[in-house]
Amino acid sequence: MNKKYLASIASLALVVSLVSGCGQNKTDNKSENQNTTIKNEKTSEKTTYPIEIEAFDSTGNTYKQTFKEAPKRVVTNNQSSTELLLELGLKDSLVGTGDLDNKVLDRLEDDYKSIPVISQKGDLAKEVLIGANPDMVIGRAASFTDERYGTIPSLNGMNINTYVQIASKMDTTQSLDNIILDVRNVGKIFNIKEKANKYADQLQDRLDKVKEKSSTIKSDPLKVMYMVKYDNGQFGVYGANASLQTEMLKLINAENVANKGGTLSTENLISLNPDAIVYVHADKNASTDKDAISSLLNNKLIQSVPAISNKKIIEVDYTELMGYGFRTFDALDKIASGLYPNIFN
Image 1 (cartoon, one colour):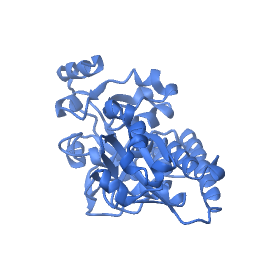
Image 2 (cartoon, one colour; image 1 turned 135 degrees about the vertical axis):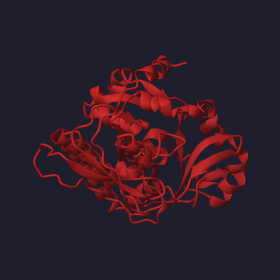
Image 3 (tube, rainbow, N blue to C red; image 1 turned 45 degrees about the vertical axis):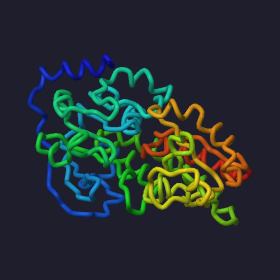
Image 4 (cartoon, rainbow, N blue to C red; image 1 turned 180 degrees about the vertical axis):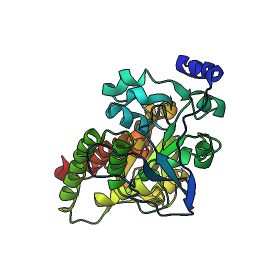
C-alpha cells in the first residue's frame, strides 16, 4: 500500500478543529454557471479579501463560497487541479490529493511526491479527508458527491470551502476559455494574481493561434471518435454530452460521432465510420492500452473504416483530454495536428 496513503490514515488521530470562515448558501438550481467570476474583487494584483465565488455540483446546484484569506490546507480531487496548483508554486498549500490517471508532468514530479495521497483507485474514506484537516477542496464537479469527496453543502458544513473547475460542468455549452478562467480565479483565491494571469495569458495565446489556423479550413468537418480501453472488439467512447471535449473538436472543424458515452462494439465502430480515432490512455487501462492500437489496425473486420484504413489514430492521455485543466491544450494541439497536419504542424 502507498506509504503516503498509510500516512494519511494515521493522521486520523490528529484531527483538529477546522479553519472557520467558509460561506455556504445555496443560490440556484440547475444554474448555467458558466463563466463564473469571483465577486468583490478589485483589479489590482493583490487580492482584497473577503471574496466570493459560486461553486456548483454535478446536478447544477450552486453554492456561494466566501474566502476570508488564501487557503492554507488544500485537498485536490483530480490530477489537473493538483498539477495547476503545483505549476503556480502552491506546493506548500497542498495536504492531500488522489492518485494519478497518468504520469505527472516531469517538471512537477518532485513536488507531487511531497503530497500525501489520500485516495487510491477511486476509494476515499471521509475520515481520511477530514483527517487531512483541509480548509478547501478543489477539482472537478463529478467528484463532489457523498461517495467521493463529499457534497459541497457537507464540506461547507465542516467549514471547508470548495472551488469547482468551471470547465468540468457537463451537459451544457462549454468553452476552453473556462479553463483559462479557472486559472485566473485560482490566482485570485490564493493571492497570486500576477503569476496566474501571466500563465492564463500564455494559454489564451495558444488558444488564439489554434482558432486562427482553424479559420483557414474550408472542408466539411471530420468525424472523430473518442475511444478508451479497446479490448478484443469492445471499447468505451466519450459522447457529445462530454461538453468540453466536443467543443474542442468544433474548434478544429471536427465533430463527435457518438451522441452519448458508453460501451460499444466492432459493429458500432463500422456504423459510426469515423474519419479519425482519438485513443485515450489511462494508467488503470495499461494492460489493454499497450496493444490497443496494433489490435485496431490489424482487425480485418474494420478495415473499411477510414480511421483504420488511413491509420488516423491520435493518442492522448486521459488527464489531457478529460482533466479540465491546462493540459487540455496539449490534447487540443495533438488532435489538431493529427487531423490537419498540413495546417497545424
